[in-house]
View 1 (tube, rainbow, N blue to C red):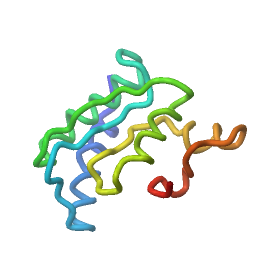
View 2: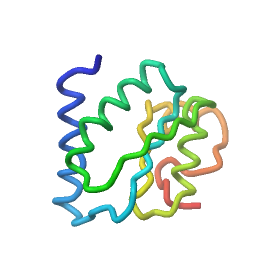
View 3: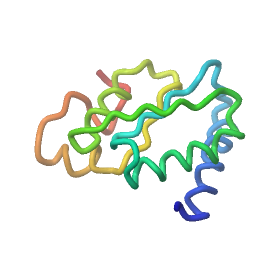
View 4: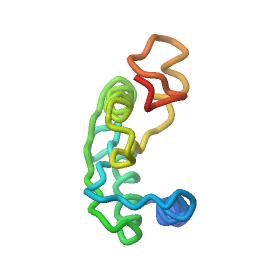
Length: 114
C-alpha cells in the first residue's frame, strides 16, 4: 500500500503543473509504467494515477511497458510527441544507472530530443 505522502504528491503534481504552465490536457493522457503489471512498482504507480485522476479533466490511461529496467518505457515516452499527453512513471534506473553502462536510443536529460 502506498504511503499517504506518495498519494498526496500524485494529487499535487498535476495541479502544480497546470498552475505553472497553464497546460490542460485535451485528450486522454497515457501514463507509461516501466514495470510488469501486478508488481510493487505497478501497484504504487496505479495508486498515484488513481489519486491524481480527480485533478485531471481527461482520463489517465495506464500502459505497462516492462523490460530493460524501464528503458523500453522511457524510449516510448521519448519518442512520443512532446505535447504532455504521454507521461512516464519510472523507478529512476532508466535515467540514472542504465545510461552509465550502455548506449540508449534516447537522451534521458532531454526526453523530447530524438
